[in-house]
Image (tube, rainbow, N blue to C red; front, side, top):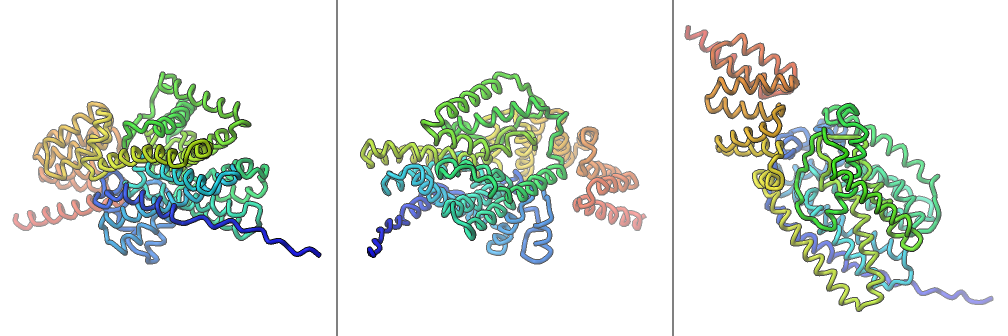
Length: 540
């Protein structure tokens, strides 16, 4: 009997490249630790929201049952609660958690890239795999498109869903042929990803893509069936959250042709911005009514079809391009406009998971170059690209330092962004810059005359300035445009009270609280006016 010959074990890859990736990401993004919260949703989600502050039963029940401002994100609320317990409401702690999550995701992309590239090219050396995977991870992490989810505390759900999504992929790749426990961990990580944000809902399809290439095990679709249940639940919860907050657009408002046009535009937008990340903005405001046959959308559609056709034609020669494009489309599908939320067509944060496929594809293309040319030369060229991306991200980060700087950046790129002008007006008013605030509201209403919130805010500044007649006109116009607001009723009540029409004021306060029973400001103003009325009655 012949003795067994032990096959030499492959040397375990060094952990230093992963550490280096994390250090580079931390260095580029550390300026966010000096940033403030911004008034673009950080107010409603965080610094004006008392409900997540703690890990008691009341807070936990709220986190797992709320659709606060739309999303169902209990895992993200838990992370905010931990931040609060550690730091209070100091923005440094919240930004630090986001930064650490992003750095961790960069490391996970590095590990994922090394596994995928080893499966795709078994002849590649360990050093080539390490360089290619590190470049892919840093292209992903340092690209300016990643700035928004890192710098914007409210967008942490993109980071957390990305973390669990990447863990799910890695656990699947660890032993794709094996039975549990790793297959179970893939499922657990998938569910956790959906509980942060359903952006990775297409994971089962991505796993099917990986089965074909680079794993080459054929379509193993039956083992993916259990993933359909959490996917369906997550989709239902996402839809419910948007309906509750009124953010979902009906087919009458946003028709099929517009949805197709949005899908074509979004598909091309993130690829184009990946190649040339100029003019990135915190908001890309497009009203729901637009012409789907405009040259912009037709061009985007033509480019998308050309890319799909190219990837399909060359799928045997360059399978990575075909399967990378499929993964990109699958991961982008939730925000392509099939279900329309809000008025934006695109957002930088939506690229976090979809562009993972693009970054890994670029890293994979380095392997042939590393065979043909000296590794040091290829690494230097890649280093120049990464240096440029890091510098662009640093510049993009600076726009998120505070609310005023954020909105000024939006308006520098698009002076007709009425939402940004309205929000800038609120910031300027809070700083006591009344005339500047009034000018921003005038400009916002010039672009969107039916912008009810801006009319109310415009009236509120006029009211504080003592211009009661002008303010009343704005409040009544705001109510005519949107009777579901409570603020205009409250403000009109204050005007009536200032004119000593107390009965009328009480009716308006009651209307405000009927519209929004949790409007504490209206309740406090009502109680104050009642005390003033009682004091005047005693004097008489």
